[in-house]
Amino acid sequence: MEVQMLSTKLIKPSSPTPSHLRTLKLSPIDQLFTYTVKPSAICYYSAESSSSSRSEDVERRNRLETSLSETLTLFYPLAGRYIKDSHSVDCNDEGVEYLEAKVEGQLSQLLSRRDEMIYQLVRLSGGESTSPVASIQITRFDCGELVIGVRIHHIVTDGFNAASFVSSWATASREGIGKLIFPTFGLTSFFPENDLPMLKPRPPPKISGTNEVVTRRFVFDGAKISSLKARAHDPSFQREPSRVAVVTALIWRALMGVSKAKHGRLRTSLASHSINLRPKIVPPLPPLCCGNLTTRYKARFTADDSNGELPDLKELVGLLRDATKSIAAMPREDMYSTVIKARNELHEDMEDEEVDVFLFSSWSRLSFHEADFGWGKPVWVSKIHFPADQIFLLDGEGGDGIDAWVGLNKQDMLQLQQDGDIMAFTCSV
Image (cartoon, rainbow, N blue to C red; front, side):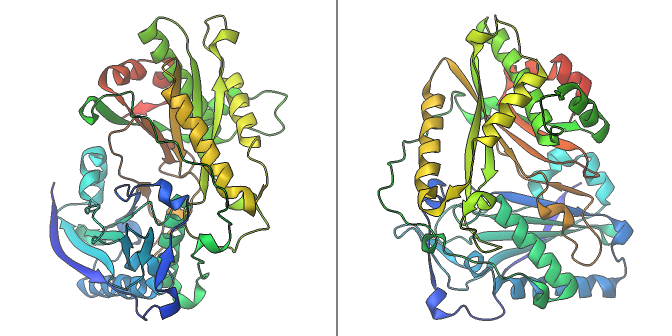
């Protein structure tokens, strides 16, 4: 099975961007990300709700392009170009990269080989400043099945906004542009930048060379997660642990075991998770405020308090819960400094050779799974995962499970796959 590229072009906004919106100044948080980092989302649509006739296929392709062009009038920075020297986006309406491809076969065949085929489903465009801020690839299958891959440079948006863009495009395709909530750009107008602390550079990865890193997907289905929740529940918890919390705790514990086997002793470790700051900021921001508005919280397990034994799941869930609560309501004037200080503290921990730092991110419950372009919701959503020592959590097929994409060096990955809890609660693919 091979993905055959058919065409490449630029899709521009259907209406020109007003002159007063031509330049988008990036916020200090946006500037924490390099232009080479490009989060992706790939939505897979089955034949059950897809059209199969040629005329309907042509109509659907035209509708996708037209609705994308209309949506870009609202998400206009995505059609612009990044200007590195001024830390800004020139909203010049040059357009997003739009590729069409086809696969001779059925979506079910691709899904049976999804982990080797996924990298052909969204373009990995260059990181130079002249390249489009966003790239979109439409891959068609026999019988009208479809895959939509979207990549947006992280310096412009975070996962929450990427999901909002895909959801808005889907709504425009299904119901028309009049149904959309207007996004707001320009975070710098909401947050003062006075007296910001200096950002300490991120230390180099402790894994030397990306060739030594492998990525595996561990699938937690709904039934296994229910069992995990029961195991992790504690009477002191006011409510049931979330899916993300129990999966994070189980992977964290398993990685502690890998580290213990490697070093001969249990080590202090951190589980650091990304979190959307929008609901935390006071006074509240507009409903769809675009840009990077995330930070990281960290849960710390101290090995000296454990007598050398791995903690149980309840303890780790409790640590994660306490860490989440530490991200309280945040006044706008404190937002930038708080995020930069949190980054600096994390970088200090990552420099400590006696501490293991495990980086988690989650797109669970984002709106990608609701993206109905007019032929039903996707049967699965994935993203591109580059070799890196990180863990990324997404909703699994059916919506009640979790797909955990774990990056580790090869030897540690072999050890992780043999962990008793990993074997009991997941299937590795």
